[in-house]
Image: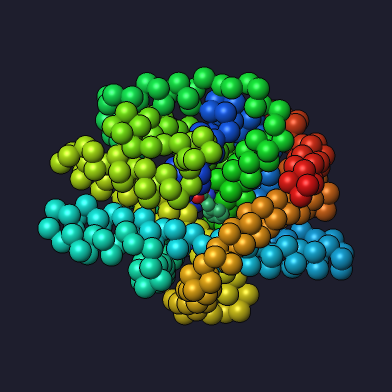
Length: 449
Ligand code: PHE
């Protein structure tokens, strides 16, 4: 076996690392744009319900199993299995998690690379290097490959440092900066003409949309992706938490931070879109829908920044630095999944394991870039629409059906001796056994239609 296991030095260290994993492009980009195109506050409402009632209990399953086993998902699930079949199911779930985390990182690193590139545009504009700025924003294979690799190397450098000197150290620096930049941008954008219109679009619900199956499917996918569910990243982070900590309250803090930051990002993006419209930038596409996804981030917002004069240069810089930080604290949790497995189960030294796993993912990402049309959407769908819900379901089956109830309770009691009397223990076991798996199956089947 490899070196002794790492451990977060404090409660806050874990909370910042795990919320760093959760808060990512999914929150600051995915959530607001989905809300914009799915009835504003109607989406927000459904999202909040699903996040608290379905995604949070599933996250707790992952955290409790991880802290108990003090190991990566493959070993952890094997250790709570009780016969040959569940042992093999545990291995399968763990390996599927590693594959899914790697595919997610494969496409995530490409998008994060664009954020790095766009963050350099205002700087090159300031230095009068217009030609370079054009190259940075042009969609070319060379630029995509270079910035994806750059982003991966930063991710690799942090993961090489291990739990305390890598993950914890950087998340405690980056997460407060993220929060600061986000709040500063919200305050600034809300002072601009047109922002009120955006707030309305975000906060006044269009209730006619609320029962729309498409809305529910999107909200559920968004909640799962946002809480980094199923792939084993949260499981491995929880495995670095000391037994003294109350894991239920840690999970609650991470969920609240994740949802809170998504909701706040809505207060930035939607008003910014309407400020853009106010400044003459088109925010509706030809079909009359609000522009979302890549066009929003890489066309509408940059066009908005350009209408702001000198202030726009700094706003653009702040915005893309915010996106880069959010992406980085998430990508490290993805890379930690294969790395922890290689170190713990194959005795590889951490640096070696990190370069190996990082190298494989760079190649995977490169293949996606070279076959962008065919593979980019496919990688996203396979990992987030199919992989994550299936893995979430399997983890609930392990926590609710396979692992002995006393084992779960003993684990909860480690950090909270009165856990048996608390509301969590009264509701959650029933929830992970029945409601959560049923909800995942229903939404999954719906999404196939
Ligand atoms: N939660 C991250 C986000 O919202 C994405 C992520 C998915 C991170 C899976 C880790 C694992 O962007």
